[in-house]
Image 1 (cartoon, rainbow, N blue to C red):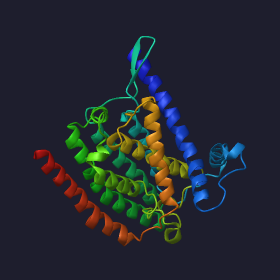
Image 2: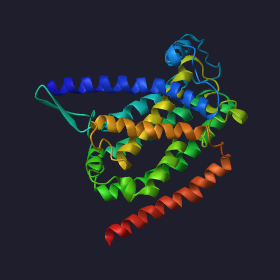
Image 3: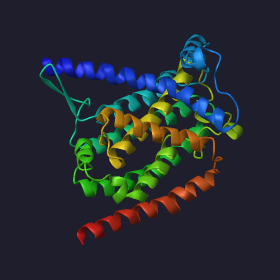
Length: 324
């Protein structure tokens, strides 16, 4: 009974903090991009614009919810929910700290610890792609379908390289458990042993979550918003919540696999984990305001002919070095 109560409390706390971070990611991105582009971000709603995410949520909730006459209604409604749900499931296996003792009871700072945590991550990350594809297809709009097909091709292409980029870490750690991988980095972070794999992972992660310069599935200029063209109100907001949630997750996973997770001197482990994740999130926002969008043929060429061979080469070199 005590374990059940502990698990429920963990889920509620982590879910609340995670969704709060996702909501204020929108404010952070608009503020940072405003500075990059020499303009102000939101600064009217609340002090320093801090209430802007709340105002955006209220606005999205009360906007008119339109469903096209020729849409597949059940799938049209379900698609954005799949996108958000997959991101929420991913956070369940990420360890954000070691353990603490409260009232004589030891509490591990993670919702659950799976022996195959990395496989779990890739499985649910793949499910998130169905939300984008089904959303565009169920809209009954040709631009939505084109955006969905672009998204499917791009995600599949970069998911292969993304999977290969973490194999070196698995080989060094000798485990698929995220907690074990973090513990193995107590003396040296994996980014020291796998610097190129870290770079490959971050590039592939940007493509997986459709961030600039890989935001071709939306491509406002040529597809009028791509796969979510027919969405409005909260269903439209759910797609963006899913995108920001996946952004936080991929940065948290990068922290876990390459940057030592909660490992660090002086400060509490949870604080180290949050600092490292925030730095990576800031990088993803900064590069959005810095790099232009690539053409679709450039994206596919880069994924199949450059990233995939490089990640394969990294796996081979890692295996040779470990064997010697």
